[in-house]
Amino acid sequence: MIKRTSLFLLWLLAVPIFAQDKKPTTLREVLLAELKSTHGVEDWFVPANVAVKGLTAEQASWTDGKGNHSVGQLAYHLVYWNRRNLANLKGEKQEKFSGNNEETFDRFDAKSWNEIVRQLDDVMNELEKWVETADEAKLKESAAVFTHISTHNAYHVGQIIYVRREQGSWDPNMGVR
Image (cartoon, rainbow, N blue to C red; front, side, top):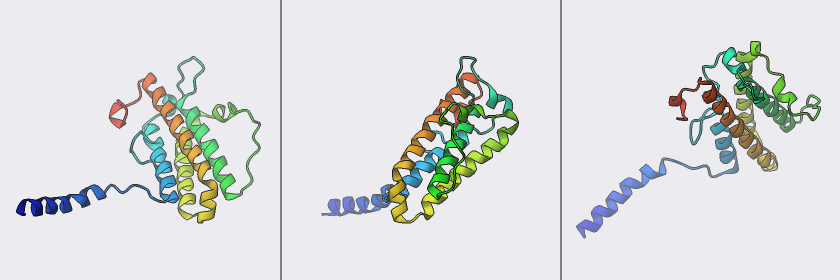
């Protein structure tokens, strides 16, 4: 009897420890977790804010010479599409898009690198705020859009890290060894 009681008490004490890592349970929580994991929360992979941290404009402009994008081009591309999606979600008029996705990479200018980093952080914060404040109907209607945004962000953040590793500017202590 004492053994059973001791085991039961031990189990009761252990439950709160495992319950502390609360998983998202609502659509809003899931979408926010997705967005935050690609923005600034270090979880399963390196988020955008960490991926671009500490880069100079010169480093952000570097390419491998094989036609692949620079970190700056990838970051600009993310700013472009995240802004476009946010404007669409808010019902705002969007700038005209030619249909040539390559243009969303090629508009990067090294002189604006610090501004691109700030804009990337800002637009990702705005997307998170939209999810936090949207009514349930809008949230459900837009859920698939946010899944695509998060997947798109994660894909290109991975490319940013790959480029930085190729360049030699990635610190493995920042997440990917």
